[in-house]
Each structure stands twice: as C-alpha cells, then as structure tokens.
Image (cartoon, rainbow, N blue to C red):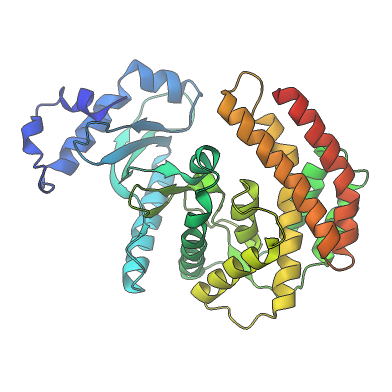
Length: 366
C-alpha cells in the first residue's frame, strides 16, 4: 500500500508537506495514515490473517522519503521496542557514531482490536532502503562493499546492549550447541548431540558473552546513500563474542569462499573487535572461534532454509536459497581443510549430511 493513497484520505492536505524540509505536522500526518491503514482490508488480510508479521506503507512518490512499518504486538512489547530504539539512538549520539549508523524512528502506537494477543500496532518510520538479504540476492557481486559497515555497526550495538541489558549472564555456549543439535538432526547427522558438544569444545572459551542482536542480513537495511539501518533490536540471551559476525556473513553467503577466504573474514573480525574494544584476542583464537561458528551456521542454513522456500516461491527466492545451501556445503569443506583438530574432524563428519541435504534442496527447488 502507498502513503499517497492514505494521506489523500486524511483531513490534513498534502500541501502541508514542505518538500524543501519536513514540517512539524508531518509526524502527525504519518500517524494518521497509519491509523487509516489498520482499517484497510489489505492490512487485515496480510497481517491479521497471518501472512506477514508487519505491514509496510511504501512511498514511491517520495512525499516523505521514508517508509512506515506497522507491527501488531502487545502494549508492553511496543513500549520495550520504543525504549530500546530511543536508547540506541542516544547511545549512537553519545559515542559519536558515524552518521551512516541509523535506527528507525518511533512514531506512535495505535490500539488494535483483533484475535490473539496483539492489542497494539507499533508504528515506526525508517529510511527507504533494501534489506541486505534482498540486496545480496539481487546484487551478489556488490553486497560485499556494505559488509564492513554492518560489522562495525553490529559491534556498536553489542556495546550498547552491554549497558542496556543488565542481567545475570547465562550459558553463552548452550545456544551454539543447540543449533548444531537441532539442525544437525534435521539433516540426518547420526549423533547431533555429540557433534554439537564437539564443536563447542573446539572454541576457545576465553571468548566473553555478548547479548544477542539477531544479526542476520534481513535485519539490516542499506539505503541509496549507503546508510545502514538496524532493525529488530533484541538482546534477550547471551552468545559468544564473534558468533553473530559469523551468522551475519555466512547465513546469506555475503563473503565468497575462495583462496582468500580467511583473510577477508579476518579483516572483518578485526574491524568488529576494534569497534567493540576487544583488541587483545589472539589471532589464532579468533580464527578457530570464527570457523566453529561458521560451521554452526552452515548446519543451521542446511536445516532451516528448505522449510522456508519451495517450488511455489518466486524464482529469485528459490535461486538464492539454493545458493545459500551451496555456500553452507562450501563452509564445511573450508573448515574441514583449514581448521585444527578437533574442528576439522567435526566439519568432515558434517560434509556428507550437508551435501546430501543440499542435493535434496536443489532437487526440490528445481
């Protein structure tokens, strides 16, 4: 749905929008557009009908140079999201972050009467852009140039979460093992529990815990001016340092696996660690940790992607899903041939199930 259509139905005329600069009445105008959108059949079919978790109001006419996102949730969760967004924005300002690190703007919360637990629609405005996952699918040869910025932004967010989420630390290795166990079982690993324990044992346990950001490429937007917008701020559980760097890079095959596979990844890890302030880690520990986490994410991709895409999906989505699974196989082969014992052996054990899963996926996706 388009903003122009809804704004034309409001009592406030479009001439109130000054194209040379935003006027004070624009947020109120956008909030009214959001309220009208909630009453449309399209919103109820897509969001309340369970086809989508959010509803996007696009702005192809560039009336606002922005996109509105409507998310059904509870009043309490909306308050948490608003507080986190505001807190991160303040943190970025206080730490003099680069101006390309951007967060959405909280606009309003609209009461919602609908089946289920949701009683509120949380409305945000964000810069127009493309998710990095979609960008990678459309322009795989161009996506790498945006990766260093996202890695640095991820470090900033992890630093903010350190102060934002004061809580007792959990077992930050449990989540890693559970991924190998759950998704290893899906792809037919004979003893996924044992393999998960082996992968975790190969990681240097000097790595500290960081709060989870959920760093996959769908949670970052890149704008036409190369700004990076962070979406979906979480921080509810702990993960080892560098795990989400591997998740971001490997889940959507953002960096190729060629002769310089590790040198490219090492540079990104160092950029992350420098931005975060963890510069004392040994280079060998960084490499072994990253390889273990990359292998973990390869298992996830092989076990997860086939359940999200099928023959009814658009051809571009099927093609990129197949590329992601092929990349997962290459990750296992890379780790098997370059990592130290016992991680290389773990990767060797996974290579067969990963290739078998890949063959099935490629056959299914046509």
